[in-house]
Image (cartoon, one colour):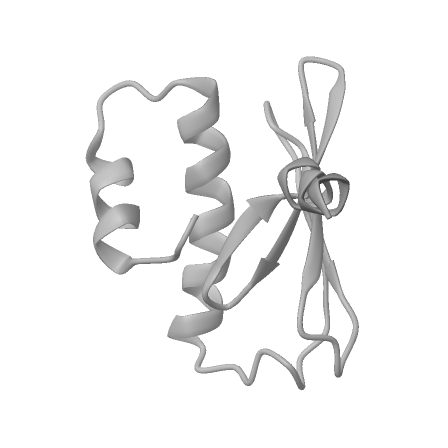
Length: 100
């Protein structure tokens, strides 16, 4: 999903969020923080943890162009890749290799 300030604001204004929308909000809010802090994404490193109903970790080493998000949803582990422009489910990216 591509990052957009409007998408974040729209999700934050929703009265009830589905589980998938809650995941989106958490990830897009993290990306939003990168933008608000005017961080150089590639030169930055991240090792952040969110606790609560949807525990998530955001990891990226300095110099890498993509980071890894690990989310625990109802006992299931989901992984996403992200950068300062958006994110995708790792599973979706890996299916591209199967098509080659």
